[in-house]
Picture 1 (spheres, rainbow, N blue to C red):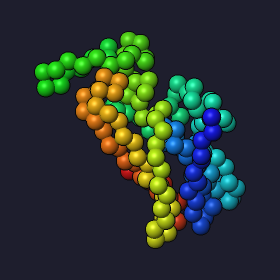
Picture 2: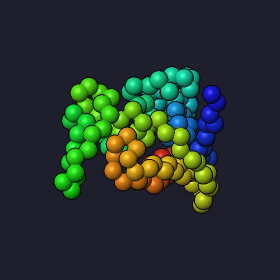
Picture 3: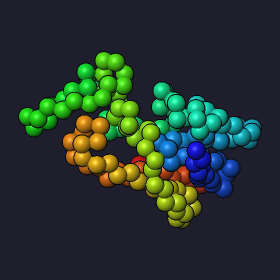
Length: 150
């Protein structure tokens, strides 16, 4: 399997790489006080390692960020059961959460800001959750070295 990596960069030499698999930020290269560039992220050196990751390194998480006890909840009087992926609980959206979805990516450059919008569509009932989702996340890097995740 191959997957594209995307690069956001600014005029000061800061670079942020991410992959559409889980919207994972795989590296952030920034200069130290002496101007030496270094990667300051925790992550892996291969796509296979990201696919097997149990720590959610650099990933978007959801539908729910944390644990749902015993993978069960009630909403508007209706009981729902979710897959257990952190026994005995459901963690960070489960085994098919945002972290393992393939996100669509649209790049942009506006007024000194390099960015990308990531999109993911999830059907109602997927992994036991009610309601469909249309999720958008924006990564942007400006020339003041501000990385935003919105």
